[in-house]
Image 1 (tube, helix red, strand yellow):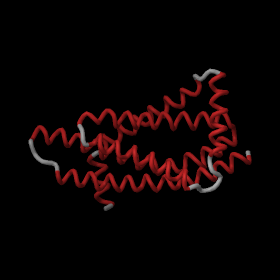
Image 2 (cartoon, one colour):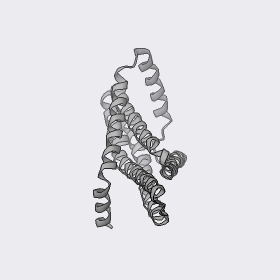
Image 3 (cartoon, one colour):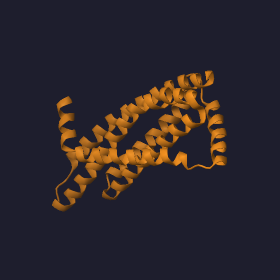
Image 4 (cartoon, helix red, strand yellow):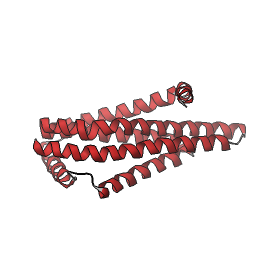
Length: 200
């Protein structure tokens, strides 16, 4: 399995490199966007983030877990469906860029608004679970993009793609399982982060 994964990365490194660049572009845009907010907008967002954090559970909450699971599964289903269409390739890159922008904006704003306590919250509740989340997300996006290109080539050659489709779906399911696991880690880390922020 490890050797197959290494061969996959070697064969599709360009796809994952461009997806990584799209994520970094979105991350940079999101981080830069914080510095262009007006003072009134910063105050309003600070109040909104404060109220949002107050609503976050200080312990592992099943309702929060189900909401996060639902949102992540919807996003992964969307990427999987986009992988079945040639026109879905730019939309996949757009999703990755938007996720990067939201991530960059959220991290920078929480740190700016909450100071040291915000930095602790970001490290515990955002950065740690996001490592698994974005690895699985970029892997899934890469699989979808690769299958879209394979679909394009099959239309030109007239060859069926049933074996590639089953492989694509199986690998995508594994990436989805990893992303779901990262969601549980995020629920636990969020509870720890909220506790840390309340102490700050």
